[in-house]
Length: 89
Image (cartoon, rainbow, N blue to C red; front, side, top):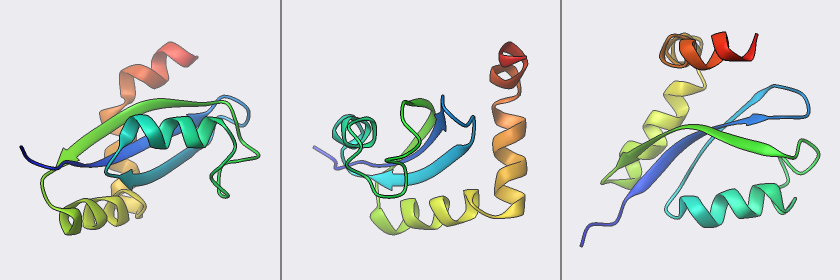
């Protein structure tokens, strides 16, 4: 069985801002985020998973995470989640 690495995007229901990260256990990582156990999001809970991608290689997931945090990556996210944003208005 293949090990997956997940690149994910969360939105804070508190401040409506995004968080982008990667993990090899998405379910556990989501629980840790929402339980306030992740330093970078502990003051921004609750958080909602709005997007994820699966990679077969950890290095690919890290590269994708870094890309999504760039200006071009943020444009990709905005285009990819356009319907989600429209529902939030």
